[in-house]
Length: 357
Ligand SMILES: *Cc1c(COP(=O)(O)O)cnc(C)c1O
Image 1 (cartoon, rainbow, N blue to C red):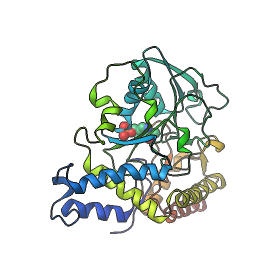
Image 2 (image 1 turned 45 degrees about the vertical axis):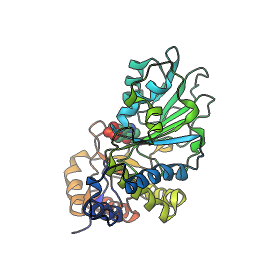
Image 3 (image 1 turned 180 degrees about the vertical axis):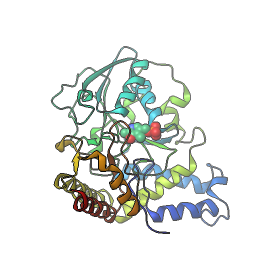
Image 4 (image 1 turned 120 degrees about the vertical axis):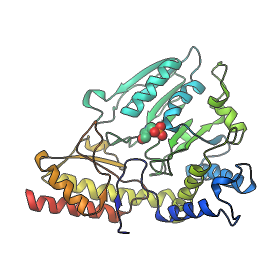
């Protein structure tokens, strides 16, 4: 099998070792002579998986016992509804920062649950920057932000200081860099971009943020029910959670967040330097807000796109076609993507310029 350089935006690349361990577990899990897929989630072996999958999140985020971690199905998209359902009180207001497609969807759901205010938005420029200098209302129930905009390729380089609970959708850059998790009341992330396969979503929440809405809660949509059940109120997505655990252990064993942050910086520098240097490419976002996870760029001569497409295909590069809302190209540089793959892409961009500029 020749190596493919996988720049897919999501589901995204996973470490090769993790894929191997995950496939072994499908056949014979922990020498039980049973597949992970055919044992009870209440078995001792799986309970250990769940305990570890929950505790490793707190360890990587460096938070204490005032936080709880659960894994749920339904994707990050279900959290667009569960967040306001669990945090927005009947007479309260939720504040949102609109930085792209995902936050727009989160706002849509929140508006159905209760009073929702968009504090700032970058929609005026097709979300190619992160709004700054806005004021967060001090009487809102929470402020919701999206740390990285997977589709438009912008990323928050710092987080707002506020006295109200801060909620963050970190689906596409969780554990890619150091953040002060203690500044957040709730962090959620669908696993399939940067920490596992599709099928499970991680929610980490401060205990004291819950139980304040005055709402009569449906069980399956109530964080407290899932916390009380140890994330096993119902059958959890056992396999995606296991593979997420393997991926996070891979991260930890290799040097953790400090290690990956350095590599992610190198990958982003390498690609953006080339985008800026190369006369046939141009970046699509404000430079100071460029995402280290999803780099979006266009060719300055769109008539040459077919030529470029052929060249990167021949180099075994996969998944860099841009999202339909932006066009052009998007190279996703998630944790498991090696610097070597970025070097291959940059070499193709250089060769393209040499041939056509
Ligand atoms: C992909 C993505 C989502 C949606 O995730 P699903 O698991 O498909 O529901 C939400 N937010 C962000 C930032 C994303 O990148």
